[in-house]
Length: 178
Image (cartoon, rainbow, N blue to C red):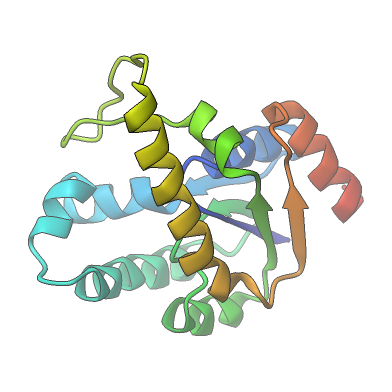
């Protein structure tokens, strides 16, 4: 079985995906990590090389094709928020995966938000000002609306409702009966 996790940034795809894969004995693949390894540079630098995000996503699509050609066994794959847009979906459908979108409230996502420097290294978490929180909440909601349009035709939607990763993994395992 191939399980693809999608959702907006910081919803928990990587954390949940890694734990799920570990529990069920599958390989875990994070497409963001694969993109950085493939091009041997951090995502932020890659994005700056392209005039539009669409041009950057075409490069990500090349990596997705490569990953899917290399892996034929059971795995859990964490997609970027744009991972179910039309061009990605055509490629994804060639491997007949189970597609799960993780959803949550913007407020809960904000509580999990992580920051990385331009080299994709985690930054120390700091307290956000009220103004910063409002700005991030607005951006999260905009992402939810924008990317949510491409999340219509999926196998399962799992609302994680602020739950810890192990609880979400149990929800997924129960849903998939694995």
